[in-house]
Structures are given as structure tokens and as C-alpha cells.
Length: 432
Image 1: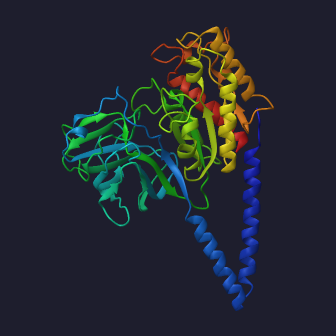
Image 2: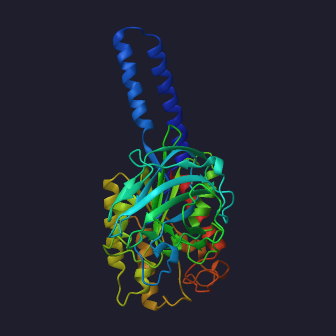
């Protein structure tokens, strides 16, 4: 496992930065001529430019509707509706903006009004109405997202702490013919007919566990900000099988541990898992390789990517595809490196006992994992999740204490996902 003593490096960098800042301030304070004043002004402009940068605090991977999706009837009624969606950002902030996506819509999305507020509880639609703030786009409270496009809203002042539950409410008068969504929010959202953006009169609202149109929330970065860590994956990252509103995906465990860490609390965790999808392929709606640009490279402030993907490819394979998966990893890493992003690979966890298991599939898994942990790996480092969750009696099978409530020996329960998160956290404490 590649290990970099990040805390020591970060401490040294802070000491060096402080020393440089002191020297600069001393120099500026000891001179009075016009040339030095001009230089000082230039420095202020540089500082201002740096503080204008953005950091993704929350995000999810956008998808198109599948035939199996159950969409609330209100969304397809043609009437004006209000949707209220809850999100839990991984870092604190006081100024933010949203990326809204109508990527898969063939008609425009028209949002008559959009507001954010603090949720009173993660399982209740009630908001703190005094905290409510309007979101605008190009100065207008009416926001139109054209068919097939994505927009970034204006910045708004809104103070919150990491892991707070925030409500994003949208009054929509024109719903696209095809809804752009993330189908597994793992938390409750609400939809109701009429205009209810600013109030708590939501009796009779329908509930649903998807995110509509809401792709990313950025916060204004400052001198204390870290970087975004994007977690690319399938259902194991998306948190399949967890109890709704339990917030027990591995990324939830990871961000909670990071918030308790003096050095890592400024680094955000962005979950870009999409259940039921392959790593290989080029479709930007599903596959890992097809989502590299949108879901990794284009994320504000991204510096690191954690990859846990490939099990679905293996589960459907009829021949040895280990070389294909490895080539796909190398393509992903190359694209990320060109964008200055460090990529950490995770070994594929065991699945003996599931419908995916066969001798061929186990051979592929072992070959892929051997590559991830080898000196020839393209990854900048790796986390051996497979060993962390494996049964002591049979390494091809996960320990029974981590098996999902579905008892499928493929997905994890809350304890298992928590172990994935803590194992990745332990690695990051040495890497960053």
C-alpha cells in the first residue's frame, strides 16, 4: 500500500506558508513608496482571485429514467408542483451555488422559484423558515434549464455546518418530458401540488427517494479549504441495501470520520456511485469510464478520486475480462492525471455466496486485485478493502457480520459499509 505521511507534509506546508506570509507582511509594512504599494495591491488581487475558487461540498451522479423507476404522479401531472429535497454537505460553508441538470430532458425545466433552508429533522419536510434564502440564476428568481443542458446558479449567502441537513425547494411549472435524476438518494424527499417553497404546509405530500435535477452544491473556498475527494463507484458506493435516512453509506462514515480529524475536516467527500452499473463502456449515463469527465474532472476543487468499481463487469462476464478492466483503470487514471487528479484504487470485495460467484469470476477478481496492489499499477495508491471484509475462513467470501439485509453476500450492511469508510479513512490519514 502506498503511504505518504500527509499530516507531516501538511504541517510543514502550513509552517512554511505562515513564514512566507510573515516575511511578506513585514516587507510590505516596512516600505512606503508607490512601487511597493502597487505590488501590495497586486498581491491583494491574487488573494481575491484565490478566494473566488469553489469547492464541491455535496454531489450526486445524474441519470435518466429507467423503465423500472416509479415516478410520483405529481411529477407527471402537468400541474405546478413543489419538490423539497434534502442534502447533507460534507464540509461547512457560508456562500454556495448549485449545479442544476436537465441533461436528459428533451424539453426545458422551468423553476419558478427555488429556496434553500435548514431542515428541522432529516425525516421531516419541515424547515426553519427564518433560514430560507432564495436562489437565483443571472439575477432572476425564475430559472430555466434548457433541454439537454446544465447550469450553475448565482452564489448565495447561506451559513451551515458540515453534515447539516439542508432543504432545497423548487417550484416547477414546467417539468421536462424526461426527468434527470439520481434514483437512489437513500433519504426521503417530498413533492406536492402547488406553490410551497417557503412554507411548511406539506400535509398530503408524496415521498420519494430520488434526487431530481440537483447535481452538485459548491461552497466558496477560502484559505482553510481542502480539496474534493470524489468516490466513483457502483451500488457499493451508492449504498445499496441501507435503511432510508440512516446515512450509513461508506461515504457517510468516511465524511463523519474526516469531520473529527483536525487535518482532514476541510476535505469534502462527493459520492458518485451509481447502482447497477458497469465500469467499462462509454455511456455517460451509467458506466464508470463514461462518467470520468462529468463526475470527476468537472467537479469543483477535485484533487483526489477513489475508485471502487468493476464487480458488475465481473458478475456478467463469460470470459476472462481482467485485462479489459485493467486497461480501463489505466485509461481513467491517465485522464485524471492530465487534470491533476490523484487516483486511489480499491480492491474488489469478495462475493462468494452471491449470484455473481463462479470460479471464472473469482479468478478475474483476484487478477484485477493483484494488479491494483502491484508496483505496475497505474493507481497512485490503493486501499485493500477485499482483505478488510473477507472471512478468515474463506477469502473469497465476505465475513457474515458484514452481509446486507438482503443476505446476498454482495452488498453490505451498515457495519460493513462503516468498515469500508473507516478503512479508506485510515489510508487517507497517511496519504493526504
